[in-house]
Length: 152
Length: 89
Length: 112
Image 1 (cartoon, rainbow over the protein chains, first blue to last red):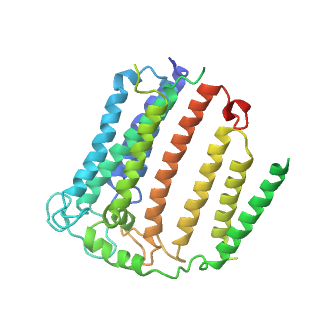
Image 2: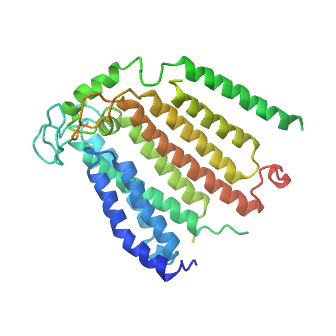
């Protein structure tokens, strides 16, 4: 059982945790407007897991549960495939929400614009599903490698 | 001993080959076949509603690539989980 | 010398493959494979570059001359697959160390 580093490191990590998570969520939510998307955003949120593992040790892992992370990973992938199947009336990965005017469905004209959040149809939803999957997968890899017993 | 001497030669042959390749493709900054990308830039914003054309390609035009990519990441996480005995107890 | 990007990619790939051939430590071999992946990513991004262009994003875009978006999308795929490969190789290296007590790839115990 790893106890973690000194209280200074723990406090700084606790302060840095919130901005890292918020920035990762921003990158995921604005994936269709600015550089970023589900993969980089999920990786940014997963750095929070690595920071927690290094600074606080492994005592909190049992409270989270690897099974729950594995379930979040599966949920992200199933959500991604489910969103892709929802447009099967026309074709797989058909972006049926565009131009409907509903949820994320506002149409956009060609050319530069300031960027509206409620556009792009399925792409933000797929970004969120992929972000959840990437976050859970990288966190699972980090936690599994950190807690593995390497010595003979 | 023989093997250790041959490795720099193999690397040098590979480097010369890659160097010849890098000078025989189009000059950097002036790609030759751009029809598909010009179509994506001209029509991607109206067809998908996404300002970010890379996101439109990743999640819409080439969605199958992304599906398999996410599956690869899933398989890697599962493989690490299995290999390091995370599932026991 | 306009093709410096491709020359840099060729150098990265060669350095990575040479290190993967000559190093003995498994962790260093994993690092070498990661360097090869970086070279491939650099080559892919350099393939789609156009002069005097901006990233293919329309939010507050100053001009409409944009670089090619498809190589960038494929580079995203390549980065994630590189990460998966490195994670799998590192976990196998940890498993080998657990089993044999060494990370030396030319140790006699590994060959039996």
